[in-house]
Length: 130
Image (cartoon, rainbow, N blue to C red; front, side, top):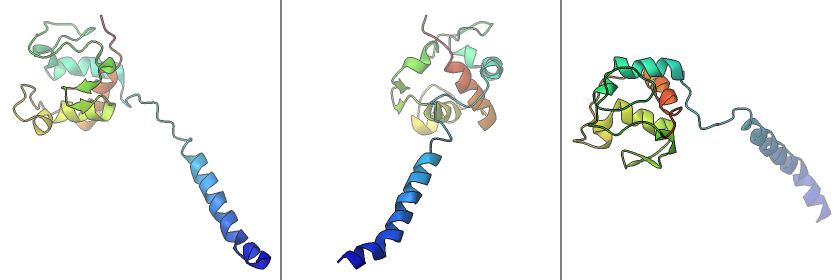
């Protein structure tokens, strides 16, 4: 019985080593929950894409609408559009294709690019509640 246990020891040791190494690698890329974009660029992009026509956005100059919800404190909300968990990825999905997520919503698809949506989400997540 003792001989069999030692015969499998190298395999077991290799598995343990692999698990430890792979487990350690996951901490090399820290998921902070923060969006990857540039908030200052996102601030300007909100105006360029016409978001102010429907939303109130603190820190962005110009006339602001009231058809859509105010965007202050959006990072503190539990859901996006009452449907999606509030994560940077889901907010980006909503901004880029709201009709796919909620057909018939008043939120239009304004053609926000992948790069621009990261910046917009980064800015929106900096906004605090009034």
